[in-house]
Image 1 (cartoon, rainbow, N blue to C red):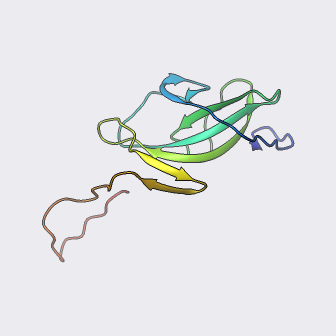
Image 2 (cartoon, rainbow, N blue to C red):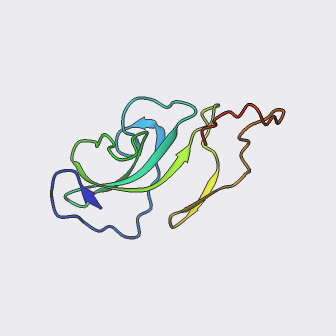
Amino acid sequence: MTTTTGHIPKVASDVNENVDITVSGAGGLDTGSETSGDWYYIYIIMKNDGTIDGLLSVAETTPTMPSGYIFKALVGAVRNDSGSNFIDFTQKGRHVTFTDPQLIKNGTFTTSAWTSQAV
């Protein structure tokens, strides 16, 4: 894990944490409230005394850390769909696979009008 305050990095192993997007702070969302259509980054966070928890954030590199937590490790990411539901996925190591195929664009194919799509 890296530190946010310049301390020597720490190692955590066999971590098993649950996070709840409806909760604010450690064990939940770092700041604000849930929004649809966003990517949420999943962090494992730790206090200097070894207390470990999980954290969700829309920030890819700089989540707002709860009080007392100084170590963080980005361990995954999940997409919240337009209905504010996490898209089911599996993760093994650094590889993530959506459980169900995702529709990127629906409509008639035309070669003269390409449209950028956020995936």
